[in-house]
Amino acid sequence: MHLTDIIAKAICKFPQHTDYLSELMKRFIQSCDQSLNHVLADGTDRTLDESIDDIMYGLHLHADEERIKRIIQDNNLLRLYCAEIFVKEIEALAIELSNFLDANGIHCIEKTNHLSAPVIHLDAQGSDTRNITGSPFWKNLIGSDMTEESTQTLFSKYFALEQFSCDEMKQLVFEPTSNDRGDFSKVIAYYKAIPSPGMSATIRYNEQRDAAYIHIYPHVEEGFIVDSPQIISDVYVITLIKDQRLGEWRVFAFGGRLDPHIRN
Image (cartoon, rainbow, N blue to C red; front, side, top):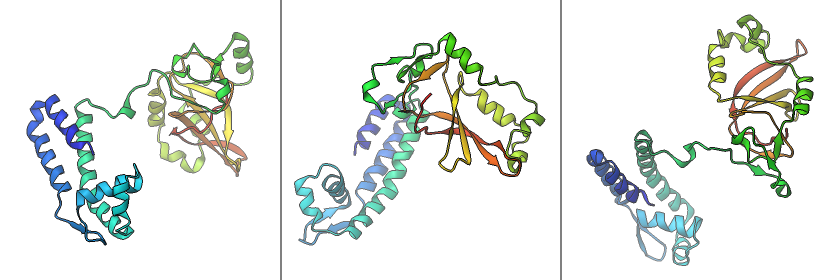
C-alpha cells in the first residue's frame, strides 16, 4: 500500500536512477488502474484498486464497517479473481523494487546482522537468569558460562574433532550418498564459513529414533550451558541416519535449518 511512497523516497536517495524509478512508479500506477469494473450485487461500481482495498481492510485486516458492507454484496470467486489479476502484476513490481533496493545497499530488515541472537524463552520465569558472557552473541539465552569443572566433565565424555582425510571422511558418510560429495571440499568450505562454530554436547533424535541431529552454533567464543528449553534459529545441523546394514550411524546431510528447541 506504500509502494509509491517508497519509490518516491528512493528517487530522492538515488537521483542517478530517477528515470528507472519513475518508470517503475508509472508501471505500478498502471497496474493499480487496470481497466476492470467490479459491480457489486447492489449495483455499486468498484475499480480493481478499490476492490483490493475492500478485500484487505474489510475482510482481512481492519474489519472496516463500510468495506464489510460492500464485501457482503460480493462473492468469494469474484474476490479471488480480482486478487489474482492484481497480485500477478503488483507482486512482480514489488519484488523488482526490493531487488533494486537490495542491490543499492538498502537491505530487508530481516537481513540485518544481529549483535546477539533473538530468542524465545518457553519458561518466562527464568528470563532473569541470562548469565552467558563469554559468547555475547548468545547472551539472550537462559544459561551460564561453562566453568572449568564443567568443561573438564564435558571433554571427559566427548572426543575432540580431528582433521580427517578424504578416505576417513568417507567412512563417516552414509554410503549410498558418499560418492556425491567428491573430495568433501564443498562441505569443508561450508563449515569453515561458519563464524566461530561451536558444537552442542546434546544429540537429538526424531520420534522414530532413526535420525539424529548434532547442532552447530555460530559465534561461539566460549562454551556455555543452557538451562531450559528455548527457541532459536540459524543453527547448522549435522543429520545422521542409522545404516541398518552396518548397525551404525552415518552422516547424511549438513546444513542450516530452524531449530525448534535447545536444551544444553
